[in-house]
Length: 308
Image (cartoon, rainbow, N blue to C red; front, side):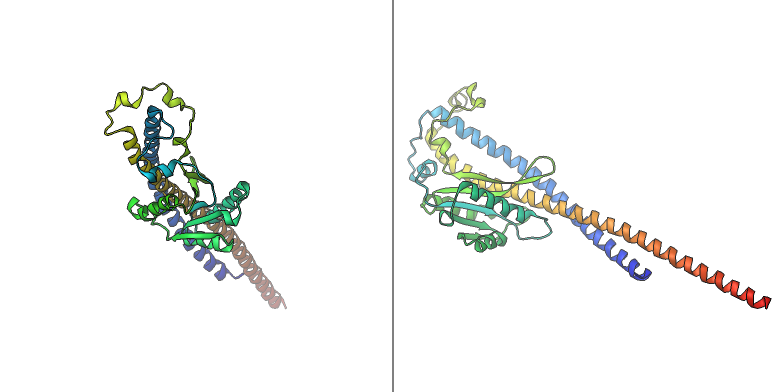
């Protein structure tokens, strides 16, 4: 390869490295922001769940005597004819194997559960998730466009209510969330969480260790108008909060995947630049050596001519 071509290749690769490095830094900032948001929101979800469990155990009635029929349906197990899966995927590229790992993980989970195509009904967030279902001939009940990089609760409120209504209306008998979780450290992993029905309020489960040594919640708070009424108000919030929490987790994992992909791209570009620079130096050294040889050979030829 000519020296000019190698130099041009080096300059092009350096520009690419600058772009990928800038994208890595942007994704890194988004990861930090979303991680703070996810951790803060998880505190809220955990506290909400703990409050619901405390109220339930204090009530000592299984299942609670709710007056609202739709709330009763949210905690009541039924014969499962149709399983709903809310699949959270991404459409933006440059995120490495994010979607591939998501879909492979879901394929394995469906196989482990023994579900057939007729058993499943999908609610997809993102065009890639919709494409996944079409390629495998799964039923798609509804499709939603992907959220912004920093999803707000108001932005997600529309389909969150639709998912809840789909269960209440009997369109599905169970609801699962399929998405990437952002783990501690530097990794993300695929997971499936069952959201509906909330069987923990419809069965005699052993008391959580964290609640055994605590006084009944009625000794701490004055509850009006009743524990059942408060639970009826908290359960829908808990369901919606879990869905929105999954969205935040998925977005955090997406930004982390993109940050990792851009770091790998930057490292590869820098390695390529180093190899090209070495090749450039070698080619230049060969060229200089050849020029010196030519000069020496020309000088020797002139000396021979003079001696004659």
